[in-house]
Length: 312
Image (cartoon, rainbow, N blue to C red; front, side):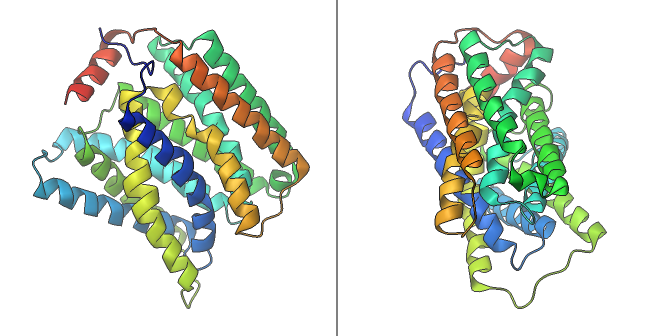
């Protein structure tokens, strides 16, 4: 069996890490800007439907195969969890909670994915557990701060988001694999966007007219950078680097989001929230060190599925 390790981090992995760490860290402020004109679920739905359609068109024009019916079904399941419940609830939470505070809370994602992986007999190393525990401590410190205490609905929404995203990440790797390459990412975005649009219609969301120029620019940024580039990078990391490293973005994003929120968004961040963000950064360093020392092979059908997708 092959091992999924990062003892030799390839340029592809480095590029994917840069995309998920830096670009995703900025997309939360972009969501905040876009919400001045777009309602949350409609914003996320159009973002992913457009990005997914463009990506699928590129696949169609190239040599890659289109998803099969079963793969479209898997895309609907994973898209509903990761995009419908995950990103939809993040946008909803940002209506009442600062973008930097929201993304800092999402650092709980690696803990949830590790717990879910235990169901498939995949155990983290001791150093990985330490890193995740440090990150969780920072999140708990953050959750007790003013940002979430002033908005219980925001706390509930971001909690649902982290649970949905984590569940989708694990299931995409072990139970409902997407089509290989860009066609899989495109089908997931299209299906997830359709679910988000359905939610938007059921909630009868309304626009804030006229559309603000900054909101329109933010929407384009979310489509191109947040969806086409960063989301594809994340799914690539899931397959080639494993969950621990793929979800490490959730430790780095808070610092970037907090800096951008204060510097460009005019958001107020307390000392407690800065301290919490610092703790989660320490967690990511520990997590990456633990991943480099992790040589545990995947077991059973889960490893075979990953090997097959990597080969494709």
